[in-house]
Length: 375
Ligand SMILES: [Fe+2]
Image (cartoon, rainbow, N blue to C red; front, side, top):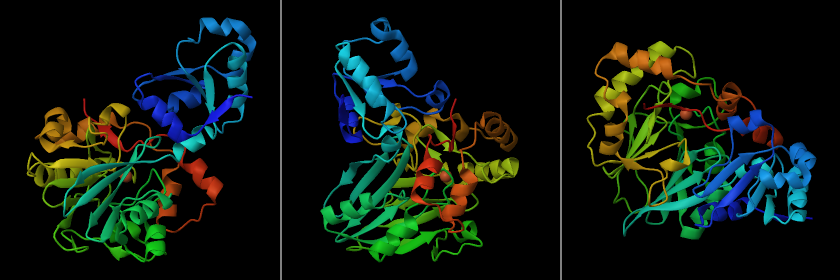
């Protein structure tokens, strides 16, 4: 029987200088779509049946100089693969809950802390989802929470603060929001743009342009800025004039795709207005903190995903296009595969469809596909 590790232990192995070899035994189509990435991880795709067939000849394919972590969908078959390799003398373990467990793993990083403000980024590496908890005094605001709301409750408890506001920057299409549920259990107010909740049965407060949020000891400023394009009423949140929680409008390596609700050309034009009239005039020193990331290399030296606006502008060609037609053509030519299940996820986030826990897991499996990347 091989040894099991959990997702946290896997993350630690991937962060350690020693590194790790991840042996993903799923079908190559599943692997190509989505697999684990880590700072010091090499990934290899070889199915269990192949490992079994090869027997000791597998030594020619899988190096033995590193710890091997076998990974499958749910951790059942990977256990058997790890046992085979263990008998061949490998230093091998397997991820106990497989890709399902990895999909639900989170890490919290302090982005900025001083006497009056604490800003945390909550990273969900498998989905590339980022959410935030901002503290002032004994109160907090949570932005774009995922459905595993215990993460935010535990963090608030640890920091000894109560959650006063929960904000969704827009109606998410790639993951199930925990916004309404977190607000319910925390006694907080839940905010989301009204235009995106038409027909919704959920209770919410309408998030409008230039809404100022008051909380805690009142010495920090959190303001919403309407930045339509990715969705019709997408918002960014400007914190103390120094940080822009940019939702899915602006990423460190691209901008939010405007086509998920159809009308790709029209929405690209709206996004152009947002880029040229609202985003580009913002100051260069702003720290941009997005709602998603696409690859592990986007994590900066401090361990979080965020860069100065100047740096992002410098490397993102789409932020430098001056001509609307050219901008629209560039966007339309780069649109990739749409996020799987985005229509149903949108309905769940509007409260129009109730998914059971297993369905929620299935619906969320896979990477986020929210951006149009820079060239
Ligand atoms: Fe989005």
